[in-house]
Structures are given as structure tokens and as C-alpha cells.
Length: 279
Image (cartoon, rainbow, N blue to C red):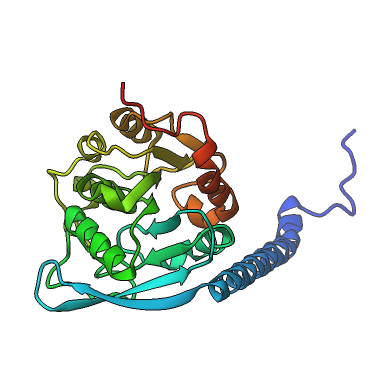
């Protein structure tokens, strides 16, 4: 005997009636997700503004590197009274010091902090043409001289690692130690970016071998731009300790977790293996 189908609706009819409810649920999910994103963006904006309020702007002029005349260089600064060396933050290519503001604000509670916009980046003047890495290092040295900074801990991020390395190699008197965060790929991988001229002959490992000051290398565990292998090769060439890995973050770790990075920078002076090996 066949079961009775009286009062039963076809499955197609049930699906048609369920479709609007599913659409409403999907829309509600999008609304909640958008609200969550907006809330996170608002929190990030508040965090940035609080950090930016701690720092102040300082303008300095340096001689042009590629052209003639002067370049006006913009920097974010907090010059506090302390026995610690000043800390100079060197940003990556195609960006400016703005994303380093949260890190600079945290460091400024413990040491004088300076975060310049390199020539052709941020609010600083461009030179007659985009500068290559050694030229950016020269400009950074000129800026330090103009600012009266005789010696500092240089903290480079991304391309800023190479700029800091070149400065330490060419003008060691300016650099007490180096902290390199997220060292980037070979210069050929950077070609076409605004602000910096690509130079395939410059290899960070070769430059690192001539640097005599203490070097520490840091990267985010999820960094897909500056790989663990590259960090290890650079550490080996520099005679430095194994790279320090900050779990859970990618290439933008100085912005994503400024508290952890600030603690690392401030604590590296007491870290075993921080001093460069000369063996």
C-alpha cells in the first residue's frame, strides 16, 4: 500500500518558499559583517589618532642627491629625555612613515624616536629622479646630520632594511645597532614601484657582510613578501642570531602588532646573540 501524499507539498515548492528566508539570512550576515568591519576600522582610526597625537612634525632641509639645491624632508618625532640611544624608523618603498606611527608612539615612551619620510615618499620632496637604495641611505645620513643625530638604533622595515644596511656599511658612525624587520626579496622583484630606482647589483647579503654593528632580524610568521629563507640567509651573511619570528602576523607586523615589535626593539640590547659574531 502506497503512503498517502495528502497534505504534502512538493519539494520544489518548499525550496521556493525557503529561498527568500535564505536570502534574508545572507543579507543579515552581510550587514553584521559590514558592521564588524566598520567597527574595526573605527577602532583602528582611534588607535592611529591617539598614536599620532604623541608625535610632532619636524621639517629639515638636506642637499639634493641626484639633482641640485635642497630637499625638504618631513619626519614624525618625539625627542624625549633618556639615556637610551635615539631610534630611527626607516619605512618601506612606495609608502611613508605614517604606518609606523603606532610603533613610534610606543617606542617614544622609552627613547627618542624619529620617523622620516625618505625623499620622494610621503610629504618629503622628490629628488630630480627616483633614488636607488645607496642614494636613499646617503640621503638618510644627510638627514641625520641635519637633525643633529650623531648615533641611533636603525630600525628598517621592508625596503627600509636595505637602506639601513647601506647606511651602516657606508657611515657606521651613525648606527649603534640594526633591527631589520621583514627584509624583502631581491631588487629585481621591486622594479616598477614608485619612489625608488631598482638596482639589480645591490644584494643585501653582500652589504651585510661589511656591517660591524650588532644586527637583529625580525619577521612575521605569515610574511609572504620577506620569506623565512631570505631572513635566514641575511642573518647568516651578517653573522647575526637566527631571525626572530613574531607569530600570527604578515609583512605589516610593525603596524599590526606595534606593542610586540616595540618590546623586541627595546629588549634586543639584552638578548643573547644580539652582538654580531666576528668569528
